[in-house]
Length: 224
Ligand code: DC
Image 1 (cartoon, rainbow, N blue to C red):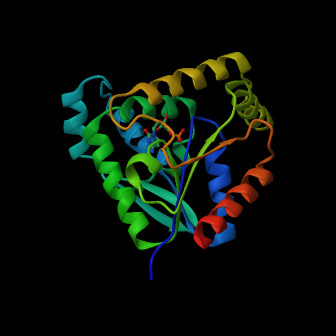
Image 2: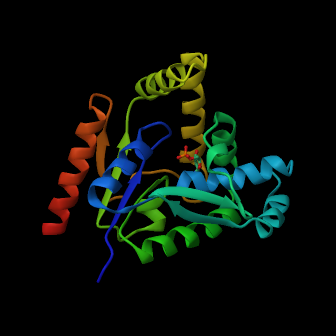
Image 3: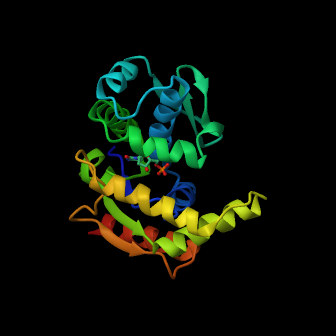
């Protein structure tokens, strides 16, 4: 039996993971958060004090990093050299560093193989920056999910404020803009909309509207 693949790409804070996670539950697919894999790589580099711009150091470090994915009650767990680091990955610092680490070919090649192996084994919905263009070029459905930087910053600000973390919305927006710029302009597998991806701008859509739209698009694609 063949596996179905849904690829969701887009800039930072567009809501990809919240949306993909919910769709995975509804369709009974496996959700693969590829950003978390780059974040685990970044965490290793941070812990080892490795200079992100030093290609040789990054390449050497890559040989000592083993990132694997497990699922616990349906939730993705990221294992870094035997340690479950899932709860250490969602900070702004790690996100920024992940974008730096992700520029390197050695890192990307290692991650892409891991991601393609996961997709070969199950029905997956995978989110990231290069899923539709590189990782799953034959995905059944490709969505490029975006929203204005103001809206993405506002959503992030709300999320942090609700957790009692004080933050500045302008700084959040600037961080988002900087990270997008780096992800869109790197040499290898930059963030871009695949030619056959459907563009969804969620600036004026609720999470449920986006989820319903993607499920509808997937069903349409399957009936084509
Ligand atoms: O989606 P995220 O914010 O967790 O991703 C963190 C960084 O990892 C992102 O800024 C760029 C990099 N990344 C990537 O280069 N390719 C992917 N498929 C996923 C993430």
